[in-house]
Length: 612
Image (cartoon, rainbow, N blue to C red; front, side, top):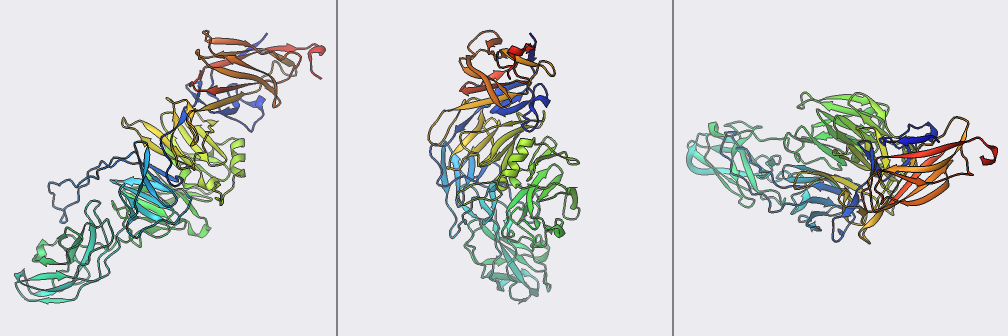
């Protein structure tokens, strides 16, 4: 009686090929099992983290830590001993975002963050792009553009320039020589070092010798992030360039006494700190700049100032092909730009050296949130496959079944909240070498990019958004959200159940179908026994023999046995088949580890034993 042992379970899910054509350790079904080190493990649970749902469904998550000291540079660039600015008195686990509101998750609860005075977010179920730069969280989404929050207040990003010109007048005896002067002022945030474009130019002041200048008409800003104003003055008898005079370290005082000589003036005011472009849809931080797009144009912020945009700071990305821009991702020394039918990238370190190149003009990206980088590889979802690139070549990595799922998925978000490939999300879990992909309403998958293996990962609650999370000991985990406003930890190996809004501790069902085995070509056989190689568990599994998609024989057996090789009778005698697959189904809490399995096949040549 031939025994077919399989002790290396590192094979992949291959649903589109004939079961008999697969490798010995491949599977035609692999659900909630994952391979690691040649073994199969039942995945960890999806632990609910929230004690109550947020007031809205969650469409964006960001692991957020407000713990970085920010030191404003000296206006005249002279090195000084910095005084630390106050750090906000919060240290949250995550910033979450919904269709119209942001929230803070900490200690099991989500608390809504108030919007700034007069600020609101138009409702949309499109996914947020959330990112942290220094001590600030930024969100980008359709119908919202670029917004900002420090965890205490949500407001529009950027600082609009003052609309009123200052007034310069003779301030009496001073040290400034006789000349004509003009001036401007800006709004300023001392915490982030963000500054607006300058105000309209003041009146022309013809100043006598040995005088000082009194500034009035310096308006306060209604923007809650403004902490002060900065004042700039022209050189004697000149205009067009304005140099730093001094700060007003509050947002209320409207006057300034100016007695600064020309040689003591600081840097020139910037005219490139404009507001973020409207209607931004996605973005990424690369080279200390925010790169963002409205789907048509790629914009970039000023260096180190992700809220400040020069109106001329944009790069056309193959504008003649009429493709929409769909993804932006930092990838080492490259910025990857996905369009609907091509992938491009930018290299360089400054606007003078930025250059645009084509990675592929055969494949595009359908969802910004699926483009992820890991260990020198880039992954993304298109309408026909999942693609992988090392920065040079591009290859499709999905099997036939996955490609069918992608093709069948709708591309629009319906009125009932249904989602499709455009709303797919993904993240990287480096510990396991996983690219985790969720297409809401259509499927959830993991791809092991180290071993080139796929598996399905259905969960009790559909994953609508996913994000990295770093625990207090810097362990990398993944947090996910459903469409009911709850937050979960995905693949928590210390927790063996899937929670739902209705209940905690729902059991997980894991199942695999092996490849199809045969005794010898053109010979039918029966299965006599099945053996499992695994530790002892106080659990049961259901074993089944499947042929041509039909269950021939099944049996529920116990794993609560000491031998590593556990042998079970599972005879299919009188039902001889040319091919047989092993199906194993496990429903339970324990994180079962399977090291191998074996089938005892007996060839059948007697006509009475062969099914007609």
